[in-house]
Length: 106
View 1 (cartoon, rainbow, N blue to C red):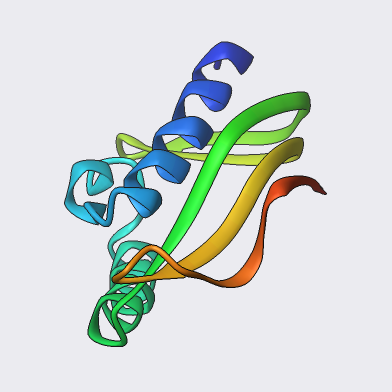
View 2: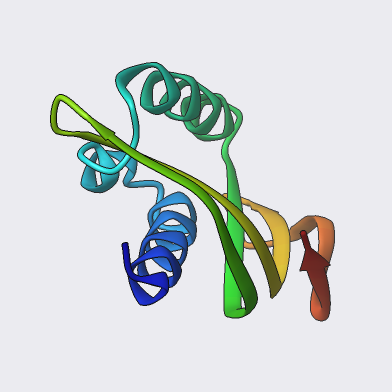
């Protein structure tokens, strides 16, 4: 498994979340995880909120485990990223976070 692929998938997940289009990543997540994330995103939509994730940089990836059982690939990675993460209402007013503060996730 290529670390470049992990970075690509991580960024795709962040973009799908911000664009409120979770269906585009259906093939990337297990059904259980997909349903959990889809429900969380729908709660944002129902409340008129948009979680915007921008300027995503992947700083470090460590692939700690990989398995492929019956065509289902499972990756366990340690990933460090930096991004802008904030929530707006439907009028684009920031209700949480900051458009100018980058945060680091691990």
